[in-house]
Image (cartoon, rainbow, N blue to C red; front, top):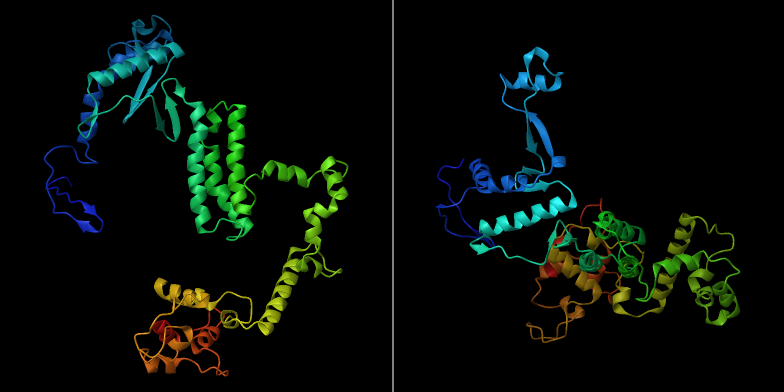
Length: 413
């Protein structure tokens, strides 16, 4: 496995020429463990020199056999002629791989830390031929440490930067009031954001100011999800929802009803459309009513509107087939851009020399192969764009096969 080893560097899908290492130990080699043990061997001996009686144990000394010595330690004195010959062994430091664990009182631990610091300077520890610097604070396993232990004032600041960076990334992919559903957004918050708040808090004696700062960060994240104002508070919203009718805020709401947002909500068309006999406690019944109402208003708008893009949309409120029919990423992007009216873009002179670029001209442009346009279905209305009609005529089921003109439509766009 480690014979005739060659190494090459892969960077940006380009590989360098291979070369053979002359120094160092390969990862996975058993030799690296022995070399590390030899190199670090002076540290445990140094730490054991300050062990106290509380961090020492007694083991049998040399006897006729190790088993006999162990049995003599457990047996009463002078049994079988063996004397209790024991020696003290410090257990204030334990080593496993590259980790070192130290035990003792606060004074003993501090003394061992000073010895470990002096030991690191005597060995001239370096990484990639650079001396390891001595710093005032560092991050270990996501927790900020200083020369006195965990740095409590900076832990909230460290949480803030990581939480807001992750929240911004999730917000960019749809965790917001106009993106994913509130249920999905809350689950994503609980899975990816909430653990960043809770990490390390169990071992930190938080102060009141730290708790207030964490609540402000949480308010900001939740306002991003539900679309609340930057001065909104989740604590206030919860309390205001469950306030009794006799409290000051409820009385002010009823007294100044004209300035209340509930009055504006009562004049909402969607709210007024709810029938009296509808079971408003049933989420399924409300959902069916809202879908029916939205479809009715859409049909009304289609009859009264003369906008080209709106008339080119499908008559039913459903997922557009261009989002699930088989297509490459570039092809699907161009389909969406055509639906949104972003293609063919700003009008300019067409290379065919007969007209400027537009949605209407694309259907008659001489540069578009005639056999591709012939594959598209013919609309019944002569004023309808054949490309819009072809997209509208796509099957609305993901299980249905693609129409015969699907490839021609992708090629044209």
